[in-house]
Length: 86
Image (cartoon, rainbow, N blue to C red; front, side, top):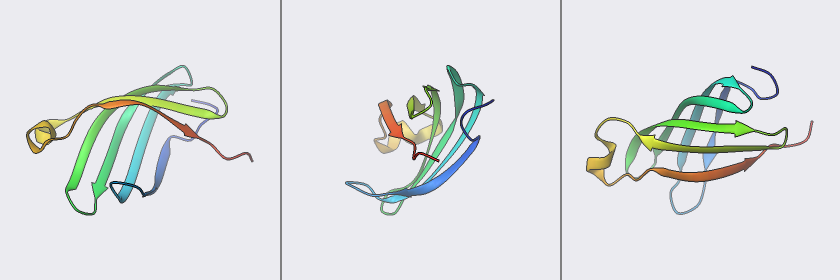
């Protein structure tokens, strides 16, 4: 895989806050992986994700794994994450 790192970690702020961890595999146009979100209030959620990277924007979508749906978790709509210039 070239162009984007395989492992990402960060902090999410907004309506939900918490720690975010992403593991990616594949080439830039056909990425797959796992997104783990540790929500400060509601606990952990794990998503199976698919997406692409076009040199400046990571676009992902995904579905919850396991019993996340029972706790009210919904599929991820397409999200666009901007990368910072080097």
